[in-house]
Image 1: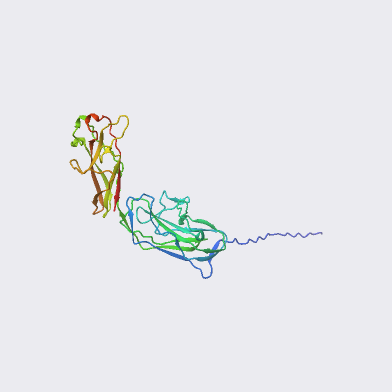
Image 2: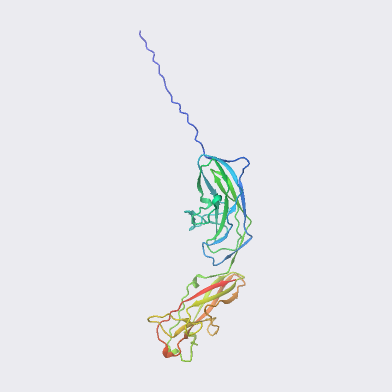
Amino acid sequence: MRRSLCCFLTFAMLCVLAPLAEAACSFDKYSALSETTINLPASLSASRDLPIGAEVWSSGWVKSPSTLIRCTGSGFIQGALASGIGAAVPGYTGGGFSSVFETNVPGLGISVYLCSNVPTGCGTDFSSLVALANLNTPLTDTYVPLVGSWLVRLIKVGPISSSVPLQIPGVSSGYAHGLETGRLMLSGQMQINTIGCEITSQSRNITVSLPSVMMADFGDDTTILNNRSKSQAFEISLMCDAGTRLRYQIDGTESSSAYHVLANAQGSGMAAGIGVQLFRGEFGDDDVVPLGISLFHTDVQSSSRVVIPLMARYYKTAARVSEMRAGQVSIAATFTLSYE
């Protein structure tokens, strides 16, 4: 009998996979985490009328201690904000990313920057500079000397509260491939003192409606109408901080024939020979508001609403009533606030 021997062979493919090299960084010998401290000033004065978005304070670029790291693979330089820094404030960007973040003081935001470009200097164009929280810079070097700088800015993002001091607990950090290489601490607390005055919203654009008058209301020997019903009282309302020495100035086109009288606009349908003079206080007060001159109003004793009462009265600028012309009266003036 013929027999056959069958041998079944199974071939297995052995695949040996080399482990993927992970991106990693470590400190070189004698190098360690670079730590920087920026001391907050004990107090800071911020003008109440400082525009939203304006810088309140800046540390400037502060150079950090150098360190040396060795890295393998490709990764990124990234950053993280201190625990005492809150969410991004809408409307503020740098390099296309959020750049201003909340602090514990209402109305006051903070920006933190880390710069490693020391040989050529760090930038100050904050519209294009990427803030720490959004850093994502590629890093492929295997031997990296890190010499950087930190910068902190405080930005007005709304009405600033002076009821609580600024404190930024925690640390802001820079990372290379996940290794914390730089650390920033903001030391101390800052008392924010708002100073000055701010015109309230209802007083930023004031329309004073004087009553209609007749040419017969005037006489050749009179200039000011001494009639309460023919005048108009109005006020400029402000919110002021304690200790403010308040001054104001009113400017406008002055009549060519009368000092400190606002001239009427010229053109078709406009009255002629008539202007408007402003007085401090109520009707009957003879304290004329001079045009183009800074006037002292008051020393503010406590933070409060301050009112500047004024009175608008018609003034005959023509020598005689016969030289007047009936028509409309339209006058513009500018109020300028100053304080010490």
